[in-house]
Amino acid sequence: MGHKIGVIGGDGIGPEVLAEGLKVIAAAGVELDTVDYRLGGARYLDDGVVLPDEVLEEWRGLDALYLGAVGTPEVPPGLIERGLLLKMRFELDLYINQRPFVFEGDGDRGAHDFVVIRENTEGTYAGEGGFLRKNTPHEIATQGSVNTRHGVERCVRYAFELANGRPRKHLTLAHKTNVLTFAGDLWERTFHEVAAEYADVETAYNHVDAACIYFVQSPEQYDVIVTDNLFGDILTDLGGAVSGGIGFASSANLNPEGVSMFEPVHGSAPDIAGQNLANPTAAVLSGAMMLDHLGETAAADRIRKACEDTSVLVGSTTEVGDIIAGRL
Image (cartoon, rainbow, N blue to C red; front, top):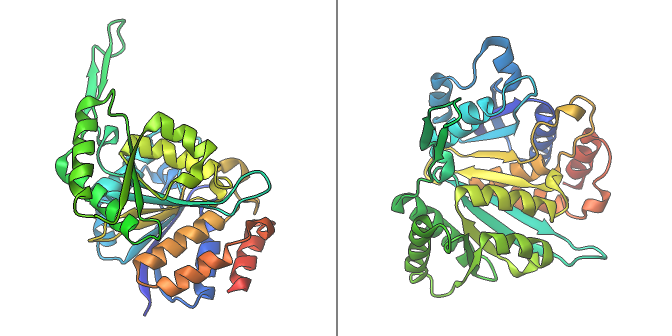
């Protein structure tokens, strides 16, 4: 029997790109024992189900989760995001969001290879806040940012471990310490205290707005970046944009001590769903990250190698999947 994987094709192009990811994993010689889960916007429209607690309990017994994309225009914004994605993150304690960005360079820009580590369960997404006098002229809305020493330190420590294992051994903290004086102070102090344990890792700090500029102008300066939930959400989308487009952007939502989830970051793209047009490379690379997590590092490296030279990864969804699988 192979690794037991929960497969959530989801909505829109999700099932299409995930099928290619599974095809490539099979071509790499890794056997998966898959369990399919029909969840997402389409499922919610059918019977009102988003993510049952009993499914969450099943997931705790799996080796990993592989997600295509979720969301449909007919479902109110935020319902699936909060009820499925955020619930999954919080309940399974997927506290690390890891997104690699590799760009081979072209005639206009040089190459870069960096990773963003985003804290994935705290910050402004923790849901602290509320309304007062809602729907009146004097309405008040508060949205707090929850930052615990435990949550910050385990994220920062993971980032240092990652940086310490990479050739450049460089880690940048991105935050906004000049304005977010309390959360920024906790992040900065924790960063420096953990840094004392990693003498070989060179460190730097960027305000997050400056980091956005550097992502565009000189992304090659980065090796590993660590940041909070909201800033990480923004920086990783920008990272995809400067690395060939989000069609190549993979991600891991990690609980290093438990089940983890792997997904491309491009969304469900309902406008092209069912037309065999979506680029499956991000799903394939997310599958490679899943194999890393499962200890199948040799197969993962072969898949990443097969995804190089993106200039020839053109064609329909299935054609690109066939090209990558053929290289294996």
